[in-house]
Image 1 (tube, rainbow over the protein chains, first blue to last red):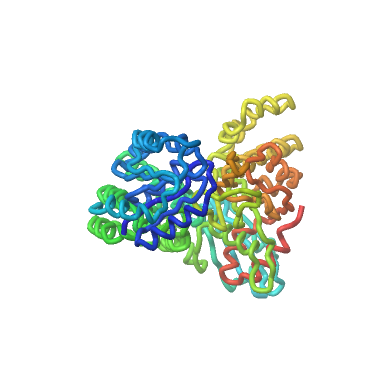
Image 2 (image 1 turned 90 degrees about the horizontal axis):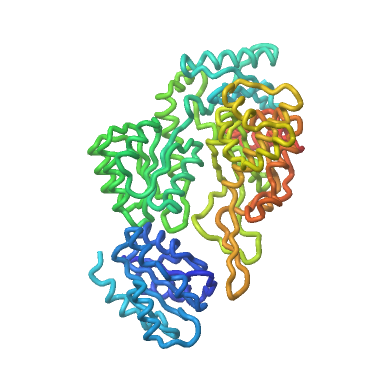
Length: 136
Length: 460
């Protein structure tokens, strides 16, 4: 069974969407490890180490995602999670910005997939499946 | 007269407690220096003679059971993967079993760390790592490291269940003594103490006390059943929860200041009481024990000095107390006993510092987070603010001229508002030092042990 760590990063307490993600991914047959709201990068990374996760899915709804996610890929590398797949989604930046720029910035930060506001977890299931296919 | 004899083989003293079953009370207590280096029975018999002198003649006992922290107690190493998760879980299991955690190792262990395990003469190794279904590579690596070393101490495996087959193969091929238990952290942030803790207790009773020369005493008493701190933890849990119709005291904190260590026990769920607090991190055990090896009244007196800030030391100097010298004196002469009022006062100050620092390391903390929804708090650890009872024990607290003041001073609530310390507890004193004995008695007769504790542990 593939393991996915999910949670809401930073000083963000939006719990409902995170529960929906947990529910959906569990239904799809993944081992979901939910670190919950108000989680730090370290909470995600520590959980991923102990559970040998394949993917970390970071949610951020309050606009400060860019600050909260900075350096996360470096920390993963430092923690030995070299090939872990990083997703991020929600209202990840402040205000209305061209999503192409936003996506580029997050990809430069080391995130593999970046999703704009309004993306539901159902819309991403095929991508998750494809990304995790063939991984041990 | 039907009586039980409860024995505590301590590192310094062998303490005897005789309980009268019919009167539901303590008949007498006695102590003598522990003689584990020569023959543990000698010290025991000296204490027994003293006990008979107090009673006024020899009596026979229906049951004689003992706990022990003699010959260095139970020395353990806790090995896990991530420091805050399985390593911390493993450490809590060791502490809950009444062990002294001499080493805490995380991630892949190396040769130097293997050497440390050998140098420290570790009694039992607790090997954890990985949630079930999670990482098993690390715990297998660590099992291989232990297997290829000259370590003979028993190994308790309580890591990722997926690794059990490989670990079993590795350790049995290397002819190591090992035991397989349930994972200490089966899921993220879920703590599972009982199985591994009970196994450690069994190994202690079957192997460790024999190796330490304590088992000899089973020729004259029934059996040695527990490490002493485990007995104290059992007593505290019983006193908190109650048994059957005999009500307990509810949430409580117990502090035991000794010569070498300061032990702190809390029996409480410790869930958030603060509005807008979110609990984070590894689950806390309901009955939690922490031990501070650097805080003690004699052997570890120098540690108290290190825990004081230069400002504290100056504060005491202004009052005419030279803490540097006071600590050095106690460290140099572990048999020193205070006699004057001033000396007792300094003992109280040092003891309250021990408890103060031990509390800081034991209780949970709040960290404020500004969110768009307003101020929120991260709670890590136990919230003990509403604990109703604080019990003091250990020589220095029992002999103190004003134990209540000593305990009150140690709380320092106003100075450390982010720490979730007890706020307005009722203070109690274990004046006869009976907790370990009552832990032992609780294995035979919990109601009786509870009644005696409620009678003998006095309100201050």
